Length: 280
Image 1: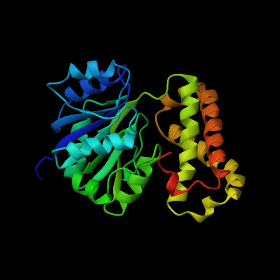
Image 2: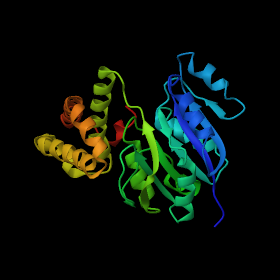
Image 3: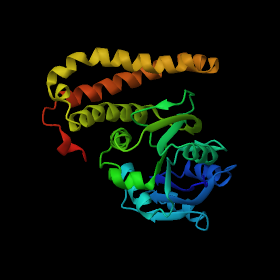
Image 4: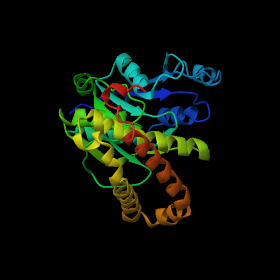
């Protein structure tokens, strides 16, 4: 099977501190057939665009309205892509040297949509979705699904569920990136609260009757326990090197889990939240 060329799409917002590392890592890939790097940028800090312009001869830069949602930025990049396969990565994620090579191998092996690991390893398996900071997809599937939904968070979940109706979504642990998450405590807690809120919103949007009642809040302790257990299980199934850092970061993890719970609970108590609020 001939190697599939790849259009790599990067949504960017005020990413001057990290995006150069992402681009440099992509430009130094050990294999794969890279056709183009598309950066869909909605920055308003004045610095990011100047930095991106230094790569003008090596990337395609799309300027968007300031603060455009990541989902819409990815869609804008995909609309401009000329390759038959799309690969998505974030402006604060750094691909391993063989990232494109491993994606190409997955495509050659029959995977049409999938992704890989963010630092922690795992095993190859079918999943409902993969994170959008490490995702590949045939453009025909992307077009058939109808792009990422216009939602502030959990858009990768909704996209994965829709793509899964067309083709199996496959997790390939060998396709690896490292991702810089929020570095400031306030930003980290705010983001966790946002994620908790949108978990509830997307489940209501999917038509889940169980999530349409405020009584869902009564099950929050069980949801928190399941979430903690899943994360801990992944850590302990992986390399022993991850165990000590996990315990070292446990206080921060628990604070984040508390903020996630607050976001979920707040959405539970807003009875009017449904699919019509996806853009909020």
